[in-house]
Image 1 (cartoon, helix red, strand yellow):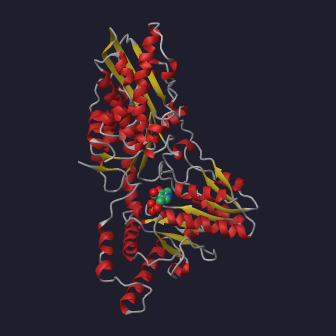
Image 2 (spheres, chains in turn orange, green):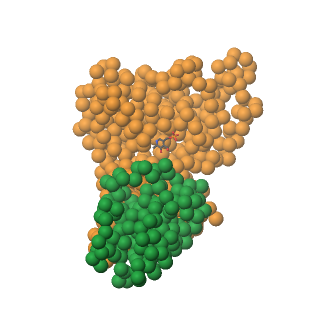
Image 3 (tube, chains in turn green, yellow):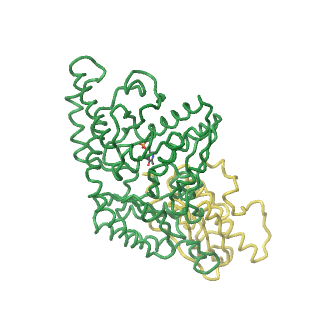
Length: 395
Length: 147
Ligand SMILES: Cc1ncc(COP(=O)(O)O)c(C=O)c1O
């Protein structure tokens, strides 16, 4: 038995997405920029797909720019707002400490180019306070970028409130909605967001395709120069199969948002309740303002990578924010941002389930994790010290 | 796969796990902050390591390295144990990914720390420069072994 519980990393491509892609390989294979019939059929299909995507987030088709995924969309949104701001002498950007690296590393680059970056604190529950964003806004603020939902701890941010504040202050607001799209309803008008990034592979679409929503009136800057695709803002022959797969997957996901949430939330809560029974553990992130499929929990006295490997042996596929899995000496910046000390951040486990999972699987995960944590604690010198009282429990 | 079969074997079925009551030497190196701690217990008779046990908090390769290192020094003389290099541990494990080499360094240092403890307890003189202080986050002495 293999239980895939790493859906925040990526998802299985749905049957409907696969089927939607197939015609684009052998039938509708034309280049949308070609004037021949085959090309024009592709161009028409592309136009239709763009309309369908736009409708799913209540945007206009001209506001959708297809990209190679979430990272590219994040980069383009941030660079656009920075360049626009710079022209008006605005060189201040507001974001949060627990953004995805696609955002944080782009901001680092801008900082080296002379921009001032304010990273707002994330509270202990992993939710940003809209009033903190408001307080940070200055005359020279060019952009506020706050993620919709966090990829590690799944916490959902007050996007509508932040959108309202930014709109009132006339500041561009971007949100990285990669983890939210297809899982939480998105209406760019109601939320008052100016730019929004989406990636197909997080909702059962294919990898390497996504889009950037950019509100009409914002002058989008190119990251990739070349042909006139995407209204001249993103060169490169369009990935039609990918775009078709993404559209089918997103339509399906959006149609089933409520149904899936109704199924997932009880599964998630069952998992959380079962895992919380393990002594000296702590659930990371707010339990209510949370993606329906995300569980993130720390166990004191053990290290995450060894936990993952042993769970994989038992057929459970998860992830962790430990240093060993991040490839550096530091555990995940997300866990540190919510105030976890390094010691316990190393012992984190992320399980991200999908509607394909079952109650039986949750129970199997609970018993397996309990068993593995217990085993690793038995061979851990840290646990020994905690038990002997020569080290103090943090959790 | 990230790890060799040998690493996975020693990780999944670690040899010599546990503690030794009234051990003759106990060494602990690493730091929870960095995510690895190794503790090695030695039972020594006539300069021979007659028993060895370990406990490790860390990733798969840290657990496998400790298991392998304890196997390699069991039944050996103290001098032989002090000769154990992290390279030898890596070779015995059929290699480690380059960013995991520090786990084998930790194993080498844990053995040394346990021997040093034995020396200290028994008032035996030794060359202090040959032993580490166990502060892996700030040591920086092993960069040369990274490749
Ligand atoms: C929040 C967030 N932003 C951006 C990305 C990057 O998306 P992509 O893999 O499509 O570049 C991811 C996925 O890893 C993510 O979780």
